[in-house]
Amino acid sequence: MFTGLVETLGRLQARESYRGGARLIISAGQALLEGLGEGDSIAVNGVCLTATGISEKNFSAVVMPETLRKTNLGDVRPGEPLNLERALPLGGRLGGHLVSGHIDATGQLAQRRPEGNAIILRFKIPPELMRYIIPKGSIAVDGVSLTVAGLDRDGFSVSLIPLTAERTTLGWRKIGDAVNIEVDLIGKYVEKLLQPHAAVKMESREKLNAAFLEEKGFI
Image 1 (cartoon, rainbow, N blue to C red):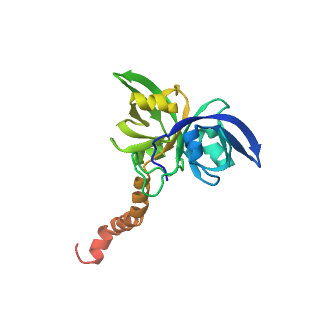
Image 2: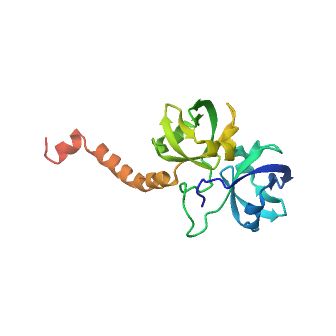
Image 3: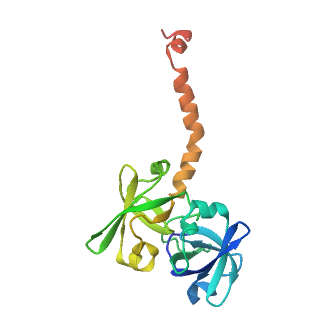
């Protein structure tokens, strides 16, 4: 589990083919590497990966074909920056929101404009994700915990403070760039829990017709 508060920016040093997938070698700061062990989870652009090797300046992670297809890690080139966050320790401070590191889909940066000391970013996303997004709710974009500032027909907008723009990849994103989207985890659980009740309610509605009322003596 993660919080969406990026610890540092790393860079992709190399990409190697590995059993149909890929191995990513990523540079990171000493502070992050000192607390990282083999087998630990780490969010890379919001994608939960497992550190499979650690050296003085880099760590490596194996990426499955499915992950390469469903996230922007399949398109990252050597030299590009990556948002990095280690897993939340038990009892740690939850400063962002609950982020699983399981990407729902990729979105696309559709608009970018300044607003005072902030930057407004608008993202287009697949329509099936829109039901999970609410005004002022939380959403993770490339692993960054953000507050939804606005909703429209096919996307949402967020407002970046200067610190977020400077310390994450979102500050450099260009129009048309693909970003990893993870909607609010709690919303998905609530929807799943309510599905049986919705089905029962629908079944009751289907039964409540003229024939049913006549059978029961109401008409």
